[in-house]
Length: 147
Image 1 (cartoon, rainbow, N blue to C red):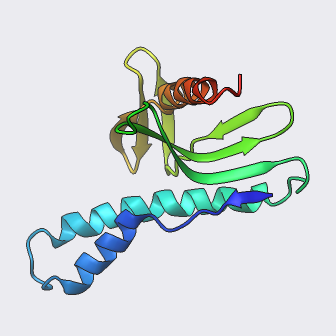
Image 2: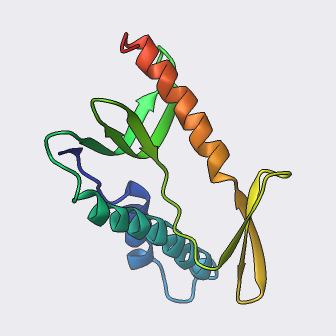
């Protein structure tokens, strides 16, 4: 059962609004279009995951999308999960990446290198990101007396 639906990110709303209002010949427009394309690709990747999650039995799975939880008691630091699936036996954190091209996971430098059309581009290692999220989530569960 989906407990928290996925919604369009606020950043996409802001970029769309900005693009509607800016002059056609503004020098920064290509940069803003590029940022919008990246955020939109990420959102589309997350939505494509949702299709596959619909096959899970409704009674045993609780799905939370776009979850933002506090990391501290003062609620000044937060961590974000693309999707969290809770079952009677485990919790599963899903971090979605929507990258096109050939990917090489470089564990020595904690990065992913994408090669696309002969161009290499480095990204932070998503495995480290999920390990950090799992650590934060375990602390959150503990602070709320779940374990």
